[in-house]
Length: 107
Length: 143
Image (cartoon, rainbow over the protein chains, first blue to last red):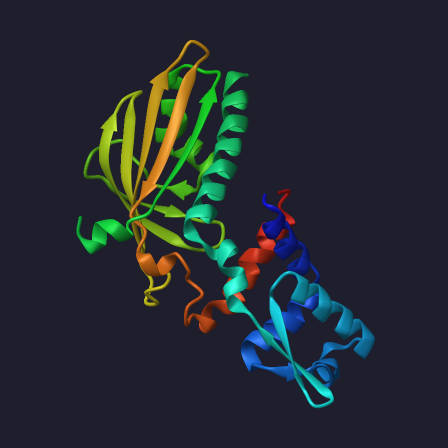
């Protein structure tokens, strides 16, 4: 697993962070205030989550006066949805299971 | 090379197993054994036999045996019909078994991805909940 993948997985591994990201995907650009209203956590916590998402390339921010607007960067998910790497992972996982099965068939 | 060829993708995974080819062949061709490592199925090692592979996630793959040379080569189609072209998949899976000193070298090749599957996120917002469910399952697995 590459460093970039690792960062993506870790960023999306947290349910609150994933909910924020999903909301940006669904509803488009949002301010921290608007995101906080529905996130169920404090504004500093939301800002922290946004910083993690930003580091992973999953969101982008845009300063507009005193407000910062955040938007989802769907292209950052490409490595996870790339079929070639997903299917490679799939077959590696299945070969692990095949190996287990062959061991059991011995007994 | 026409554009369709140019867009074809292929995935290859190889591994050596410390068992003879005939044992691997059984694991690849006997339905109750296939189910243990791959998916539920109604497979039969007969060219032209149509069968389904049923995934744990509820997806059903349409398959047809293309080649079944005992202990050597097994090939079948691996198609997933979906109204959303981003998820519609037509591919062929080929297992090649080669006897080695230590056992058997197994190679699987899956060929024939459509270009738009390379980045299935394009315009597929309806697929988001499904994607996140899958991602969650993926994260739950040891990486």
